[in-house]
Length: 244
Length: 276
Image 1 (cartoon, rainbow over the protein chains, first blue to last red):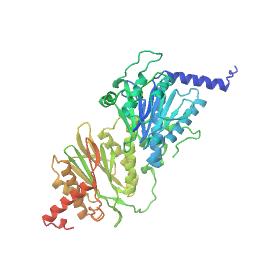
Image 2: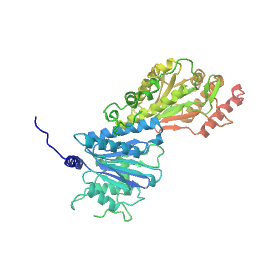
Image 3: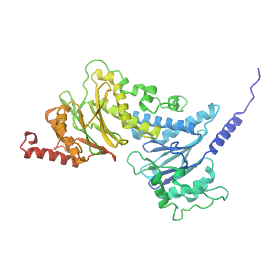
C-alpha cells in the first residue's frame, strides 16, 4: 500500500483558489452600477437565451461570471430559496442579505470540503425605495462576502475595469449616463489598445428600477436599449472616463 | 420547512436540477406546505365561503368580476373579501368555495406562474397556465371530498392568438374552455341568466364592465350568499380587465358609475330591482 502524499492545508487552499480564479478570469466581465432611480447591470453577452443577469425576487437580482452551469445552478437555488421564504413568511421578508448569506455558506462549504471549488463570482443586489437603501453584495468562489457601494465589476478584467469605472462614477447619475459609462468601460481595451464600441446586440443589460411598484427587475433589449444608449451615451458633467 | 441544511449551505433539494414548477419543488421538499397534502379531521367544519364570480369576453380581452361577501352558514363572515386576483401579468383568477383554502391556492398559483417565469426566462402559454391550475385543483380533491371544495374561474389574454379566453373547472380538476361568458359560485345560476341576456359579441370595455356588474347585481338580488354593491359603506365589487396591456383593476369610481347606470335604468323603468 502506498502512502498518500502530504499536502499542507495552506497549499491545498492556494491551489484551489488559483484554479477557481483561472476559471473566472476566462469569462467576460459584468458591471453593476447604481444610478438615481435604481441599479443597472451590463455585460457583453451576444446570447439572447443564456443570461448572466436575472431576477431573483421582487426587488432582488443576481449577476454572475464564471462557469455557466455552476452559476445557473446557484441562480435556480436562489429563486427557490426566495420563493419558498416569501411563501412561508411574507414577500417583504425576502432580503438580499439573507440570500447572500445562504450563497456564502454554500460557496464556502464547497470550497473547503469538495474536490473542486465553484468557478464563479456573484453579486446579489437589492434595490431600496431610496438610493441609501440599495444593497450590493459581492461573493467570491471561496464564500467571502463584500458589501459594495455604488458599483462593482466582476470577471476576468475586474481590477482594470473597476479602476475605470471608479474614476467615472458619481452618485446620482441618470440611467443613460450610468449605462453609457458601463458600456464604455466594458469596451475599453487593455494597454492603450483601440477601445471597441459595443452595440445593443452585443450586450445584456437589465435594471432594478426602484420606481416600479412590485417587481423591479426589467431587461433592456433591442430598440429600448438602443434608445437609452443612443440618447445620452457619453456621461456628461465631469463624469467622463479618465485613464487611471 | 428547512431553508438550510446543517452545514448552513442551501439544501440539496435547492441545487438539484429539476422542474420549473414551484409546486413540484414543494411536493419534494416541504409537502406539508401544499394545501392538498394536509389531513383534515373528520366531522363537519364551518369555514367562510366565497361566492359569485363572473367572467366574460369582449373585443380585445376579458373582464372578471367578483362580489365582496363571504358567508359562514347563514352569517356574513366578511363584507370586504376579495375573490378576483391577478394570476400574473396577463391572466386573472377568481375563486368560489372555502375561502381560506381558495386564497391559499391563489397565492400558490401566482407563485407557480412567477417561479416558472423566473426559472425559464419566459412566460407560460395561456393553456399551460390553465393546465397548471387544473393540476393544483386535482391535488385538492381529498379536501374537496370532505366539504372543503375550491372552484376557480380562470381568464386571460392569449398573447399568441390575441384574444381573451375563459376556463372553468370542476372539483376533480376537469378543465373546460368557456366561450362568451361564465360564472361560478352560489349566485352563478342567476348571474349566468343575466349574462346570457346582456352579452353580445364585440362589446367594448366599459360596456363589458357594466354587463359584469349587472350580472353580480342580479345574482345578489336572488342569492343571499352574494353581496350586492354597498352604497353606504362604498364597497364595490372587484372588477378587472385583462387585455394586451395586461391585468388592470377597474377603479372604484368607474364601478360606482356602472352601478348607478344599472340601478337608475331599473328605477326609471319602474322595476322592483331598482328600488334600493
